[in-house]
Image (cartoon, rainbow, N blue to C red; front, top):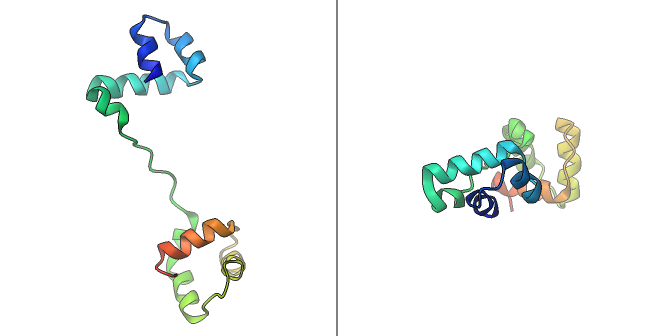
Length: 103
């Protein structure tokens, strides 16, 4: 919204980017979103994030954990690292386990 306001004052894009600490590409995207959808278009968050690399191993991990229920997150974290070579924090492991339906 700040970038849009500064644009409305006639400020050059270079200055808008400096003040708002955004890239030229980001400014161009904001202006396009405003042009296409108005203020409501700017409010839509389109970032989807990156898919977890653990999802590639979902089936094998799910089967393993059904056979060998982990008692702790640390135990699940260790098993995931041994099976996949992917090291994740306890928070990420808990989120993954929840995503595959484990409590």
